[in-house]
Length: 108
Image 1 (cartoon, helix red, strand yellow):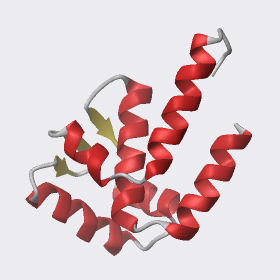
Image 2 (cartoon, rainbow, N blue to C red; image 1 turned 30 degrees about the horizontal axis):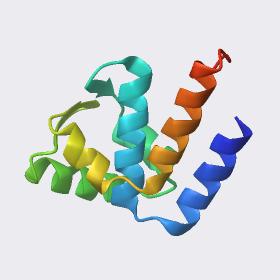
Image 3 (cartoon, helix red, strand yellow; image 1 turned 135 degrees about the vertical axis):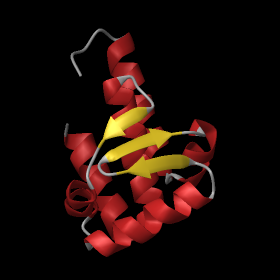
Image 4 (cartoon, rainbow, N blue to C red; image 1 turned 60 degrees about the vertical axis):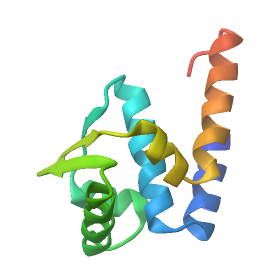
């Protein structure tokens, strides 16, 4: 949990909104074990520390690129590899830590 908090703080300080949004989408998809996640723009704006309009613009750009399908609080990842490419390295760092913890038999 401490690593996640530290990684998240650094992520907010140094990475673009698009990269952070992609990280959030991947983490949500991993948690729900589904490529469709229910996240509102309002919730995402709070989690990303940006205005709701920034989430709207970024989500629209990802949709236009064919990476996601987005409508009223429902986001479907269409191209996971593409989203992983757009996400900051924070996702890979956290994913490795979670995978290692699970491999070691720790509760995550």
